[in-house]
Image: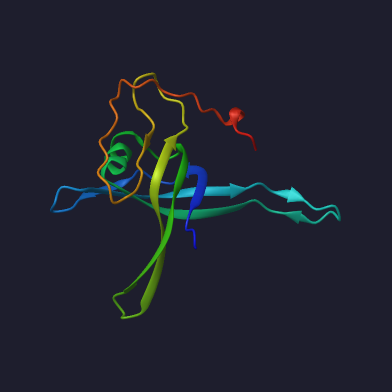
Length: 147
């Protein structure tokens, strides 16, 4: 048995880039930053803050939601799978890209009531209908997190 699951809590690095396939399926991509705080070890050694950038890929209803409601700086909770692909660049050099295929997303940045609804999808391979914008907004402030 094996498991490929990732959970991220971070900030959107730039507005989503959304494209539509010939079949009408939406695909969104954008970077998400996660940071570990700076700290000092018992011996006085200072460890600086470290930021990691993750390339997110969202499909169908999640991509459409991202296109409408996600902006640079927003805080997101993400669940997904790690996928690595390769391609040859213009010089013929093989390059590798690691991406997070998002299965579940919650928007944690407070918005005016009624402007968005948290979205999730059981898997990237199933059709997801966007939730109506009239769904009540959950207040998921960072103070409520257990860590």
